[in-house]
Image 1 (cartoon, rainbow, N blue to C red):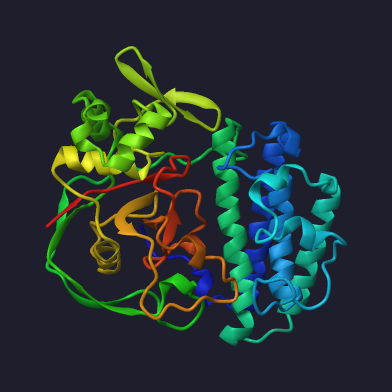
Image 2: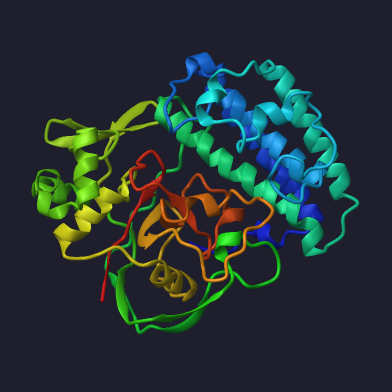
Length: 395
């Protein structure tokens, strides 16, 4: 992982303008890839919790930007934005706070071309307003928020392509071989979270004085080969390696190998965007649930890193610590820092505290402008559709 990229958190108007256009090109390319695979209409998309209908997601991305930027919303509740949506039914269709997930398949949405025109109009108006905006962080907050939101939904659209077995518009880059070995850190004290100028997500603050005990951590993520050794040792069949929640997950899913893995003689293959390919033993293992990561750690006599350990290692500058190719499960539940205050997008963090697990890092599907050692991602422990792996840790 290198840091030679511009962070969206401190982008000024010209860089934000270019990034917003780049994000929209990516969004439309991913939507068109889903449409080419036959998933442009809700009726063709399976109703599963992992997915949104792509047409709804496309409209929601533009509506969110309109809500916070063009309508100057001070919060996420109905009535906290000025004026009306450019679409007569925009608020009724695309507000994720008021449109339940299951209802998104039954909405009478505009045709794709009409929604693309709406997306284009929102972007044109955003860019015109941004050109008149100064460098003040408070004034740029809604643009940075809209950009991060679109980038995260772009990654979700890639999850959808993988889940549906559809081809991605560009092949996913091969993951670099995971560095081997272990790094030791003496520990110390630091401020956990984001407290500098620019944009911060609400769950990253307030900054928290944190004491880190000495620990050892893998230089890279656990590989396919290492995980296969766990499987060959009977890892999925030995209850002692699994938590109660993990055993319940095993019973519910019937899983005996990572999602998308399939045996091929003495070897294994995996499914990548609809194409079956040989499993590279040196690549980091991906598409694992928290339960699988925890079971591996128990088998190996290790544990997952805590959030503050991961952040300490990532911010240390030690070149041997490699991150950024896959999201990484941590041992920490997703909880607020003491003194937490929700930002304008109040539903971003608060509803999920205590029911999600924290992940750190980034994946190949995360635009580099979002990469940050303080970024806290969070998913339900059972999720294995995301581009996530893990590394192990010890005292």
